[in-house]
Image 1 (cartoon, one colour):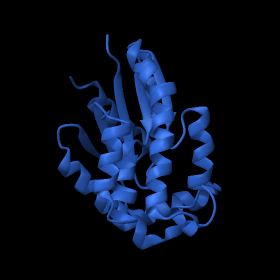
Image 2 (cartoon, helix red, strand yellow):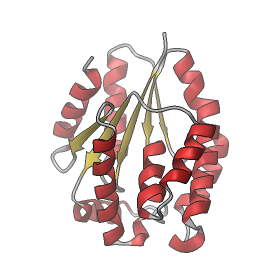
Image 3 (tube, helix red, strand yellow):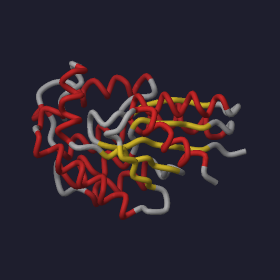
Length: 204
C-alpha cells in the first residue's frame, strides 16, 4: 500500500514543529507507521546543507543560490528518507517541503517561481497528499521566535515586513492548490489547533 505525505507550512514561529509531533503521536495511536522529518534536512547530507541555509547572516546567499541549495537538500531527503518510507506504506509528516521554496524564494526573496518549479519538476516530482498551512499573526510568531532563542534564525532576521509577505505568500499558495492545502488558524491554544489538524488529517 502506498504511503501518505503530509506537510506543515507557514511562517517561522507558527508552531509547525509542535503540531507535527502532536499529529505524529495521534497517527501512531491509530496504528500507523509514522516518519517525522523536516526540511531543509531529514537525511545526513540534507542536514549538512541545512546549516548553510538557516544559520549565519541573512545576505550570505542570493535567492538563486538558495533555490539550488534547497533543491539539493530536498533531493537527498527524498532519496534517503521520504521515498523509502512511502514505498513501505508509512505516513511521512514533514515540517516544510517544496511549498516553502515556492513562497520564500519563488515569491518573496525573489521573483523565481519559474526556476523553482522547473527544478522541482526535474529533481523532485512529488507533491504532498495534504498540506497544512498554519496561519498566525507575524508579530505573535516573532515573539515566539525570540523566546525560542535558536541560532537557526537567518530568515527571521530579514525583518517584520518579510514575515508579513511570507504570510501573504502562503495564503496565496492555498488558493493556488485548494485540492491539497488547508489553512489552520494557529494563534489559539495548542490543543485546539491540534484538534483541528487531527480532523483534517483523518478526513477521507
